[in-house]
Image (tube, rainbow, N blue to C red):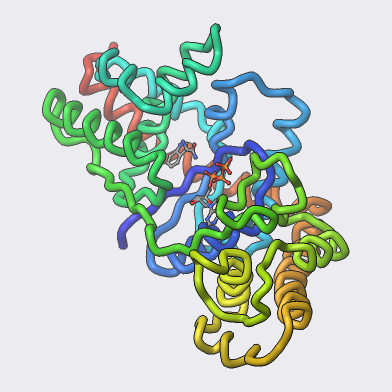
Length: 326
Ligand code: ATP
Ligand code: LTN
């Protein structure tokens, strides 16, 4: 069975866009692959973090993903920072990475421009990401298009290491999902629904309360035509609500057009709000249950034990090949 790995950077809050665009797909992938899922908490440190916020977000993210249906029996789940062999492997890989390669990464170029003083970690970030992937002989890495270049760097490093020291790593591939529907901002449906958006009324957070969800959907920007008809150019607001409804109810756009023929926007929006509430409320309930039990710790304890064992073997193999031996 092929191995797949997802890394979650615990920054920001998860939105309905993340759920429909990424988490739902992950639930399908976990049935087809040997799946690894980890919180990239070491990666979060490349930019300044408030320790107590970071600590809370690490648990929050995990609890939410599991509450959404990421199954601990189908995924090896762990925290990156609890596996000390990963940064050790990263160092060995750094010594097989050219400065030119690392400094050419688009994310590094952009982020280093935003700050006058930035950490060396921002430069070595993709090498640590290569370690995350290569230690476990991962075949496929599902990532957004912004991370594709980093997976390609991991491939280059792996190919070089294999050439210099003998077969050590599986060469991973990025899995870019282009098919997922992009959910748009409810207030400005020409923009992506994004956790970094300043106007909270356009964004549904996974942990929003029922009243807030209903208010945001009832207040979504639409048009003056009064027909539930899909046209992303002319009717971006209604089309976005139709996409949300389609994804959550597993219906086609045609079916939705038929269902709401002759109905007004108020009736349609109420149905969309019902669908979102019906989806999110049980997830939130499970999330709170997880946060207040020791289930999360149990899952992480099991995950890290396996992950460390695999990483330790890989580290020892690499170190030996590189001449680090008594
Ligand atoms: P930001 O909004 O700050 O750019 P983000 O919400 O896009 O961040 P990421 O961590 O980059 O967060 O995204 C995680 C995953 O969720 C990616 O696979 C991305 O494609 C998906 N995703 C995020 N927002 C949406 C959205 N509005 N519609 C569909 N998929 C989304
Ligand atoms: N860089 C990714 C998070 C990440 C990751 C990984 C993803 C860290 N290590 C390994 C896939 C595989 C991000 O910013 N979302």
